[in-house]
Image 1 (spheres, rainbow, N blue to C red):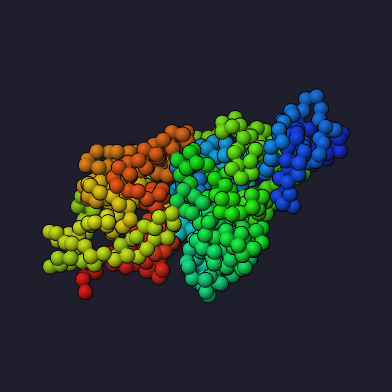
Image 2: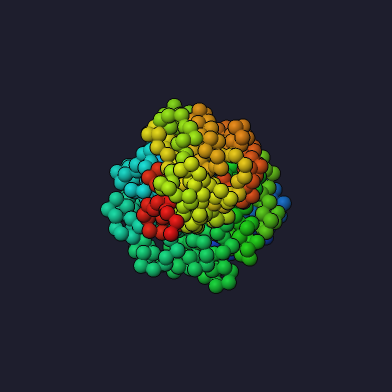
Length: 600
């Protein structure tokens, strides 16, 4: 599959043949490098690459015969020539950036191909939002493929989204030029129980000859898992241990191992390859969710590959997991993922395969970044007004909106509490004895209040519950309109009045993240597009995001990448407890449960 912004192989095949045969000069020759061949797992010294029309025409020991007087010659200086890195599963919105600004942030890190699932914006704006993300993706100087979101809502009956994605939407999107497949099938109970809507979406994708993304978040590897695999998803990124990875590849799925801003699931799964010796071609590296601070300061797929190597993986095997394995999975092995003739000329020059410094990045035959500096433009769409101003609360919030009434006469209650787990997406189902004062249940100690504030239809609805693990102290609150996946507003705090201030502030600015303490705003990240993204430069957003992280620490939070934990507390397809606009949800049973219970 090719997009409209880059010529297909049939369009340029005669030119590639002429260059390879020595009958015409190449546009560019990369000379004197170490060719990292991910097809054969070899490193070949003193090789050249000849490029024509953005594609590779020749790779071999001497490209001088296809070098003309106008050919650009890039001296590799005996550095390693590796394929551009591919992210097999990710959400651009998690970077708080538009596709253009996300591309600008990751290109210097060597990412030249992304497989993105815009289901965050789908929950807020529906098919229109997906189309906007898809269209801006196609404008970029690197390869950004879009997976059509499959589950909005992610768990029907347990949450209310701004828009619903239908099977008809999926059928329509499969004809768009940049659609590569179906986004992660999060409604795994629906697939396991043969839900007609889920199966219709999968069937439409398979009829189009495209890839069905998976998301099986349950630890149960019994009949439900078998039923899910039989339903058609081709990959899964929700594994957290070696047994998960092994189970998936044994059943013919690709195991996608992720290292995002807060998800550290590579080290616990890569032993399936490094110790158990399973075939690495069935394993893929990805990020899933990276916020802007991680992208600007730490890296993207280069960070994941370095981490896999640090976990004991052979460097070339790790590169396969971030290049050819990913391309093959999406049916693009002849298009990208390796440095071989006919493929897009996506090449990185690096002096060290272990530390992986990204020194030169070439995408589609042109230098797009050098020594960390981007060298090309990343075009923006003109985002319409309909994509902005999406925060509708119905009324100004007050402290009363966040009150949790106790049963009459109770002095204390037993509360079901969401327990945050550092560096993992799953939460724990905890219980805590909480005091009652003036008829209201009060959070204390390690327990804070959490609220889900409806923001799509101005209903004024607020679901209140409790969460533990952030470590907040003093009178504070943090609010975010990034609230995977329904993207209402999540507010966490120790004081109901501060929670109201934070919620109202986000309504005022049209979405984002804010932190209040003692009536003062400590940090604000404006995300005016769908309440999820900014079209400001990545460095500016990252600076504000870092200020937000610092403010969280000022309020007592020491969790690694705690903001990512905050933003996923409404994701009602990952165990154990989550909050939605419809109540507190036990994801182990997919049932709503009471927030408080009388003490026994």
